[in-house]
Image (tube, rainbow, N blue to C red):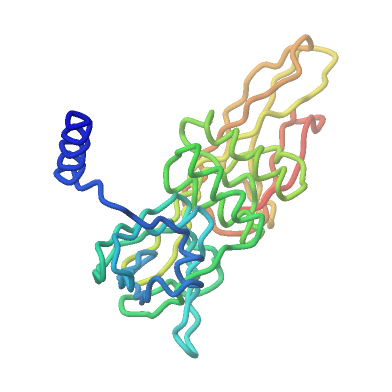
Amino acid sequence: MFRTLFQLAILWLVLQSLGLQAKTRVSIKQAFEKKYISAKALCTGGLELDYTVTNLLHDTLIVVIPPGWRFNSDAGKNDYQDILVTRQELLVLNANEKKKFHLKGFCCEASKSGPIEGVPYTLGNLADSSLTLLARYLSQHPIDENTQQYAVWAISDKEETANITARNDSMASLLRNFVATIKGEPLPWFTLLKRANVSHFGTVSNHPLRFKADINYVIQEITYSYCYILDDKGNVVSEIFGKWLLPQNNEYQASFNVAGLKKGDYKLILDNKKDTLFEKTFKI
């Protein structure tokens, strides 16, 4: 008996030295509903927030912010972009502690002005089911931030799913499939690599870089082909020098540098100066 009590005492001392005391773990939604915390959210510039949280309990508290939590602009007449969290965040607070956490997310209102330093935000809520599904996927399938941003815009702002791409496109291809399924649309026939930039002052810019498409053609004999992109006025804005096509093949991999092209309607054409072998419009 004495030996058992001694072992329990040693275990208790070890746990205390490791800081493994009793903790309350709740979702952020529950924390607000049960009045475990009070909080304040302020933008630090761009899509980043200082989230100041006060633990109202006499116990250590772990608050879980799930992927899909959305912070809404609360700046009065000036309505800024809302911010979507795409990974789980753990806020750990000691008893009665007030602590500031730095959170980062993605724009989910592309048409709104970029948030600036000092802009207040609401304490957050779970986004709609489509954005929440996407956020959970992104939390489990890490990919670069640029590709994540275009995936969010593809759902939140109905932007082209084709913009979800990366220089190494294998991971982005799976993400395009996932987003297309959520949106209930077919996979895009092309991809358009773009770079998004949200400055510290809140301005948002998009820069197209590379257009790619795997297209099919049908010919009866060997022919010399030309592949090019036309703008809405019919001007050639990018061109691949001609190559020979063979009847036994029917696939053509088009890849164009489109840096500097303005937003608008364009057309991809593959021809042999006599017949049009492929023609389809797309947007930048």
